[in-house]
Each structure stands twice: as C-alpha cells, then as structure tokens.
Image (cartoon, rainbow, N blue to C red; front, side, top):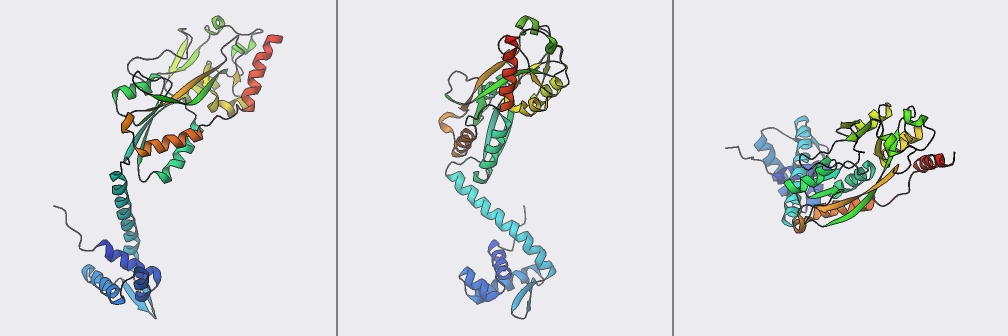
Length: 316
C-alpha cells in the first residue's frame, strides 16, 4: 500500500501565497484568511517536513534554499491537481479523454497541422492519437476499430459523411525523365511503358487499385515522402497531391507530364464520425476547426503554369 502524504495541497498553496505576495499579512489578504491562520499553516508545514522553508528578512518572508526547491515543485503539483479536477469536470460532461483520428495521407499537411495547433489550447487535456492511412486503410479502420473521426476518399455502407476537401493530383516526373523527350502529347499506352511509383494501400483486406494504370511496371512504396523522393531522383513518374509538390514544381525538381488526358485529377475526401451518435464534443470541435482550415484555396500559380505548359503541347 502506498504511503499517504502528510502535507496537503492547501498547505502548499498557502506557502506559495506567502512567497508570491511577500509576507503573511499580504497572503492572508489575498487568500481571504486571517493572518494567524496563514502563520499556523506554514508553521505546521515546516514542522511536518522537519526544517524551515522561510526566513524573515526585515518585513519580508524569504525562502531558504530547501524552500525554494520545494516551492518550485509544489507549483507543478498544484497545477496538476487543478488540471485533474478540470479533466474530471469535462469528463462528467461527456468530453473525451482521448480521440483517435484516422486521416488519409492525401489530406494536405498544412491545414491538418494548423487544425491540430488550434485544437490543442481548446482540448481541455484531451489526448490525440493520429493515424495516417492510404486508400482503403481509413475505411478498414472504421470497419475493424472504433476511431472517433476518419478522413477518407471512401465511405463504407451504413456511414454518413460530409465532403470536407477536394484534393488534386498532378502527373509529374523529374525534368530529366525520358517522357519529356517526346514530341507529342503522351498517351496512356505510352505512359504504361514507363515505371510508375504508387503509394501502397495501407489496408490489410480489400485493397484498392485506384491511382495506377494497371501496368506491371510499377514500384510500390509505403509513404508519400518516399514516392516524392523517388520521382525527384528520376526513377519513375507518379500522380502526387498538388498541395505537397508546389515547392518542387517551383524549384524545377518536378515537371507536369504532358498527357493527352488525365494529367490533373481530383478526389473528394470525406469526414466520417466513427462512433455516430456517440461522437463527443472534442471530436466535433476538432472537425469544426479542420473544416475551417480546409476551406478551398486557389491553385498555386506554379501549378497553373505547369498545366498551361502541358496544354501548350497541343499547339506545337
């Protein structure tokens, strides 16, 4: 059995008040207590600990070295106690202690990070578990687990969902890729002869085939970052989210492929409450913030430029 503390939180609070306000009389006024009550509390605390925490210099109470160490620690202790009570209060109102977010990797990084940053000071201590998935992975998480919120391009039967953002993809390759030596627009048949980089579906069952041409000439990677680095190296081509490649297009590390059709694709991502009517207020708050941060933004000038360059092949 663990040992019960002899010193109470109230004793630490009184000691802090004496230090912060510069004396017993001032602490008594701040805490709306009598000065004798403040003096007794501090004296009792020092007796229980077995050494002095304060010394009186002139009219002001000063901490001893030991007292200084303990007051610093007690501030953390008091804050934890207050946070614990606050958490208990919010849990009593149905506020979730933890939320599980499952987000498709195609979701733009910037609005997701902004939403998380805005949510944190309003979270009331709620923990966040963020899982990134690809294609069918988010749908599988709904069917096999109990996530609070899922962002996915697919909505399983029996779930209601709201469209949250339209994500665009651009067919790109490194400038030194052989496809850029073609004198005419590139057909699907020609494209299928080149190596395509595809991000692996993270689901274990019912994998989706979206995003690749059906050719056997493909490499499969586990993350968007890996696909991006391989394409920049000149090994293959890929359709990559425009939100993640603007800088690479601007720097010239990537170029849009001049395809006959399908160079620019878009996919709707949906917000799905995994627990339906049991969705808690923290999850709802996060989705509200995410929807605000995911408001449509204009296509970057660099992507518009790339698309114009691609279409200009038609008039050679």
